[in-house]
Length: 274
Ligand code: KIV
Image 1 (cartoon, protein in one colour):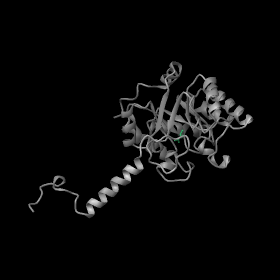
Image 2 (tube, protein in one colour; image 1 turned 120 degrees about the horizontal axis):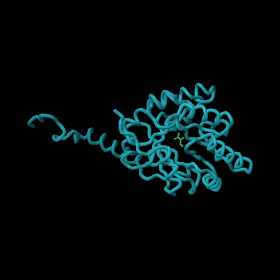
Image 3 (cartoon, helix red, strand yellow; image 1 turned 45 degrees about the vertical axis):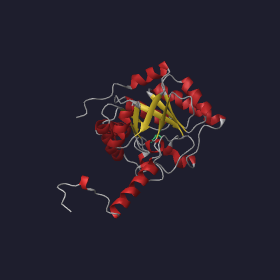
Image 4 (cartoon, protein in one colour; image 1 turned 90 degrees about the vertical axis):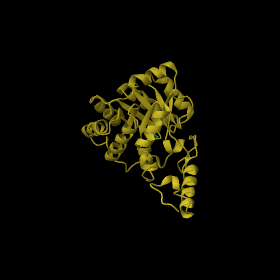
């Protein structure tokens, strides 16, 4: 029974910004990851559609479905009953109609048991989707800059906001999203100066990933943070080397079974006399 939800809520993050307390967020995709995040005191979890890449092995996030996010969000909630969880609305789950956007957001909250949803982009249509979802009493987190669901439009995972026009457009989008009512805004893959400017302009907190040092908080993908990933962009800092640790442990296990060293007598039930 998930009765013990976080004491943090959408208002807490605003207060943290006002107090100058940096906000921490990390992705998680299953109960064991979520359990570790909850034990770490990281402020919130994102069930990101990055799961398509780091868990399901796709080259981008476009194939992730609402059912995938529901399945993984529910697992995350079971592992982290007390942590604020934001779940991603996947590609094409909020583009076709406002009703569909509302129904899919509600599915993530009701079946996935998350506290809020996130969607990408700041165009007029996206702002309408934000308003429609908020109308269902569901908190929405925005996400602009290098939005992975636009990978084909951008011609790859490319830093955004580099020209004067693109810089101005991202500031316009950030202000429009705040005005529409998002409680937080993820800024991804933009120059540091733009990350700082948006963070200073907005009252709501900004969470950066590859957006420099001056956003109100940071988010990293779990696998990148732990060194359990094959691709390490410039903005990632790995705080562990899990890939090496895991492969080393698996090799050790393989060797011990081959050599007859595992299982030992201490691992068996009613050992036979030799
Ligand atoms: O899907 C994800 O993990 C994200 C973060 C990179 C912000 O959207």
